[in-house]
Each structure stands twice: as C-alpha cells, then as structure tokens.
Image (tube, rainbow, N blue to C red):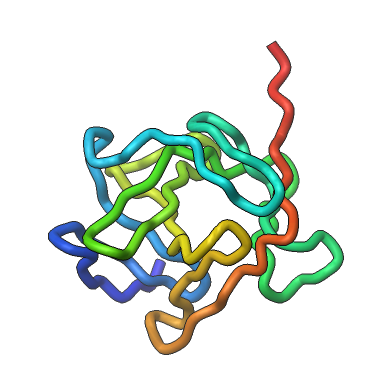
Length: 131
C-alpha cells in the first residue's frame, strides 16, 4: 500500500489515499467513552458506519462483514485522534485514526496528504455482538 509517512507528535503517522493510520502501543491509547453522532461509544464497540447511510461522500462506510473496533483516543497537545482497530486487528501496532473535531465532525487526510475530508457524523451504526 502506498502511503506518506509523517509524524503525529513522536508517533509514526501514515496517510494513504483515503485512510490514516498511526503506530501506537496499547498504553498510548486513552480508553474512554466518546460522543460521536447521536451515541456514546465505548472501547470495544464495533462500528460499521459513521456519517449518513444515504450519502456516500463525507461518510465512513465499512464493507459488509467488516468493522472498525473503537479502541479510545490519542492526543498530542490540542489535536485528538479517534483510534480504531480494523476488524479488531492491529497488525504491527497500526491503528486506523480520524481527527476528532467535535461529536458531529471527524476529519481524515486524504490523497497522501494532499487534501482532506471531513466526516459529517450525523449517525453511527454500532454492530450488535452476539454472545
């Protein structure tokens, strides 16, 4: 996968065409509840959509059968990242991340750092986990 490697504080930050990743240790992540859209998410919640189901642009929609597992937040100064494991996995301690602007707006750098996209978090879908 082609990426632009940068830094977020002292952590490696990777900008792909349409996703951002950060290399973190589990101890770097602040496990906390977070208000996104119309819900409060908890670490371990599995997200399948952030945005608007009927609107493709400015929405994060995960392929059927896949999910983003909310892990917590990571911050460096005033900037806060929302941290996810893709399908619960974190190979080589790489986590997908979104800038948290407010509960109704997230942001990602796109096109290898040449542009960005704000996510209008009008709704969030949390996958029900069967026990």
